Image (cartoon, rainbow, N blue to C red; front, side, top):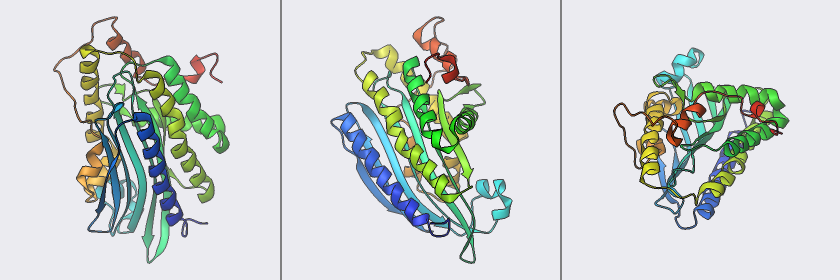
Length: 309
C-alpha cells in the first residue's frame, strides 16, 4: 500500500474507529445512545456526525467522521503551504469532543486525520495528523499520569521517548490560549504533516486512535461517581468557556472546516451544551478551583513521578 492507493484503506479504518468508540462510550454511559446525522457536502464528499445527549455520564458527546474533497484549498491551508495553491484535495478524519456531566470527569478531545493533495490525478502531497488531549476542571495527579503514560506507551514502537517528547511538546504549544497565558488542559499528543513512510505513519495514526479509549475510560470510571454540588458545577461551566474560546479563536481544524464550506453543525459540535462567562472571575486563594491554575502550564509530567514507568 502506498499514499496513492491507501486513502480508502485509511477511510475504512476511520469509520471502524468511530463505530468502536461510540460503542465503548455508550457502554460507559449506561443509558444514552448516539444519534447519527448523515450528510453530504455540495462540493464533494460527506460524513456522519454522531451525538449523545443527556446521558448518565456524558452531558454531550460528539464524534464525527468526514470524507470531503474540493478543487481549491481554503486560505488558511494554502497560506501555510503555498506550493499547494490550486491543487485539488481530499481529507478524511474522525474528531471527537466529550463533555461529561460530573465536573470531576475531564473533558477530552481526540482527532485522527489524513490529507491528500492532487494535480492531474496524481498525489503531490499527503500527510497524517492527530492526537488527543485532556481538560480537567478538578485535576488528579494519578489521572494525569495515567493519561501521559498511555500516550508514551503507544509512541514506543514509533520512536519511543523522542516521539513522545516531541508530540507532547507540540500538544502543549498548540493547545495554548495566548490571551489567557494558559494551556487548555494537561496536554497529551499532537502531530501534523506526518509524511515519512506511509505504512509506518498510518500505524502510528492507528495507535493514537485506538489508544484513546485506553487513556480516557479508566479516568471516567474513577471519577464518574464523585459527589459534587452547585459550586463545582458552576466552576465547570465557567471553565468550559475557555474551551469555547480556543475552538473559535485558535483551532485550525475549525478554521479549515468553516473556510472550506464545511457543515457548520458538525464542525461546531465540539462546543459544550452549557457554558458561562463571568467578568473578572478569580478563584478563592487556596481553593480547589485555584489549584487548577497549577496544571495549566507545560510540565514534564512523567519526569516528576519517581514511579513514572
